[in-house]
Length: 219
Image (tube, rainbow, N blue to C red):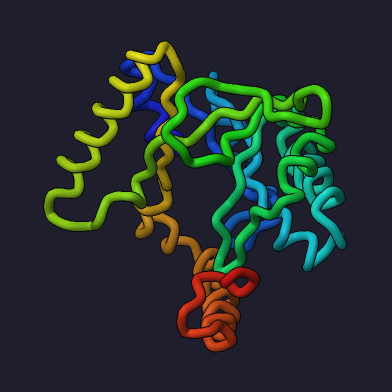
């Protein structure tokens, strides 16, 4: 990520990194190290409320507050934004998710993936929620990994940026930096150990899923 931020700095761009403070692939030390190199960029929460509610907190409301507090502890500062993690075979979005986001005190979320470019406050009874909702508009995972990946990705990004500009709105692209340097990640024995602990559990969960299902907790 610091290498990516160096590229961004050449063009006057700042980005937000969504981190999982309770995930398996990195921990508090890595988050603190990254925070020390962050510069003007932002850290927000990559929430997995369903996953952590089941494993630790009991319900999504407590999970939202607990994940936010854990990331703020590692960072030594406030976390204002959240985007829900797709999960390792667990779908982390339910009808309670936006209520959990609101109750935890986030200022904004980028959970929805849609074609709407204007931020909005979602309805809440007779009023609206305090948390500002901003849509996601394109993700690198939306492009098939073919030899034309870069060309198709750049074309899609330019098209949606132009749409946002026409509407006077906000364009939110989504990238997954781990894929840019998986070799570097595997250089560290502790990361190999993390993957070794994760893979058997992941394969076991696949074995428990129905053939036509994409998630353990959703058809």
